[in-house]
Image (cartoon, rainbow, N blue to C red; front, side):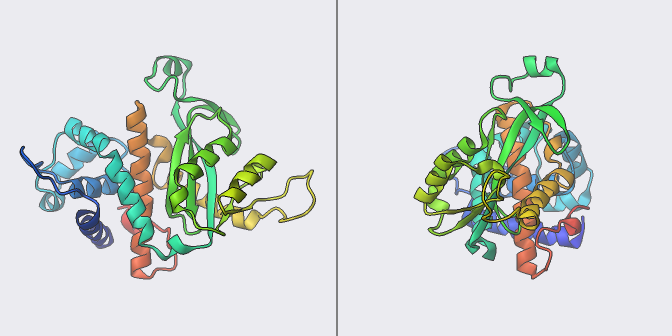
Amino acid sequence: MTKELNTLLTALYVLIDDHVAPSRTGRGRRPELSDAELVTLAVAQVLLGYDCERRWVRHIRSSPQWQQMFPYLPEQSGYHKRLKKARPLLGRALLLIAEQCPSWYDDVWMTDATPVPCGASRETARRSDLAGDAGYGYCASHSRFYWGFKLYLVCTGDGMPIMWCLANPKIGEREVVAALLEHNHHLLRFGQILLADKGFSGKQFKQLIDAMGLRLLRPDRKDETYTNGNLGGVRQWIESVNQTLKAQLGLEKHGGRTLAGVFTRISQRLLALAAGIWHNWALGLTAKRSLIAYDH
């Protein structure tokens, strides 16, 4: 573990313990691994690239340095169950971290969708517990079909996740983003700019965005008169965020086999990204989304 990662995890533990983790009252034995410790371990697991929970638990148990930080660690099954039950806690932690960063007050937020494959064979798609929720979609960047979900993300210019959801790839992008914005309308500010791609064109979607007090900024389609141009340089912001999630945080290697498991693992990766950006802001670094100092 590097000194930078140790500092990040310590700061994250204090933040979660003070503001997010609920104080347990009433009867019953208190858990030996606190909620704040659980969230900190979940973030460390993703930053260090341990996609397999068994390997992660084994690594913690074999390292004296980790054992000093976390004296008690449940078995893999217990760790997995605690994580799945902590999904609301992961969501609150993500929102709290986002609110701590100056980019929360940016006028421009971005939205995009990226594939989250969950299987490769026809037999998997037929027998999986995700059957009925996941579906087939087409990934244009890799020119291939996949079976799984689409991750819809709204983030700031530095990549800080604000709101997100998983949806069947067969559902229209405008329909999903409209539902996502309506569900999280309390996070939106009047006059805010939402940067999207040309797939979010359409009169009905534009009217919905206007009704929310937002301004939609997207590239022009070929059959439209010039308004914004292609916005190629600006659109690379959100594409680079997706690349960070896939290349550095293992988005496509989540390994989830149930709906709750997939949701938990995606939450872990988004929370790890948010924690890295938040800590880089605190250190005053220029590259806010750089995670190199924390991945070893």
